[in-house]
Amino acid sequence: MDISEFEELRTEILSCQKCGLAVTRNHVVFGEGNPKAEILIIGEGPGAEEDKTGRPFVGRSGKLLDKILDACGFTRKEHVFIANIVKCRPPNNRPPMPEERAACIPYLDKQIEMIDPKIIILLGATALSMVDTKSKITKVRGNWIIWSNRLVMPTFHPSALLRNPNLKKDSWEDFKKVVYKYRELVNPKHFSANIPL
Ligand code: URA
Figure 1 (spheres, protein in one colour):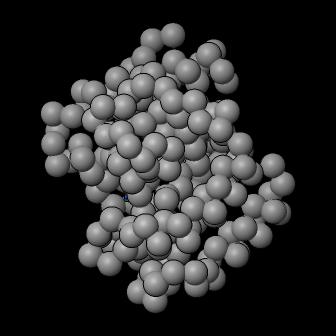
Figure 2 (figure 1 turned 90 degrees about the vertical axis):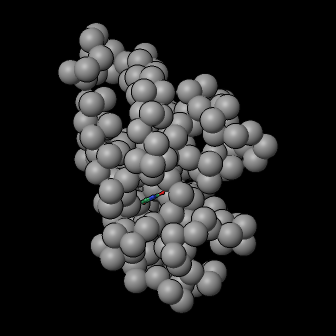
């Protein structure tokens, strides 16, 4: 990973005008975390808080995501990079439209290529559509998918867990699988207070 190339990509994305979301956004949300992380987390798109701050997953969903990462022994700073399918907020939190996704996905492709993560976590249906347009998240979650030579774990979006706390149990099973895989592929001694070595 060439950090200066990554920063060039950030600069390019921050001034993007490729779709209509550029008109209504306050901030482009490039993503954050360790650009050399072995885990890339992909959400849907910025919400109100993210649009205000320019940072991914800082609203209610983000707080829950942070709790889950903490339970796994992962930090934003060291273990993960967090990005989204679209980098600008769709008004009224509607899902991004096909043309908006199509305009933005080449940026995510570049981020994936540069970060070169071993594991990708897809949060929710919009993120899942990047690798599988046919299956439902409820059906494929918790199952590893091999996509472009990478291991991909689809799971529920934290906003789904906020709406329906009954899903939290399944979500935790999915994240446990990520921790086991991380120990297998990256660091056998990775510590999580909740998942014994
Ligand atoms: N939801 C997302 O999908 N992404 C964010 O960055 C925040 C909320």
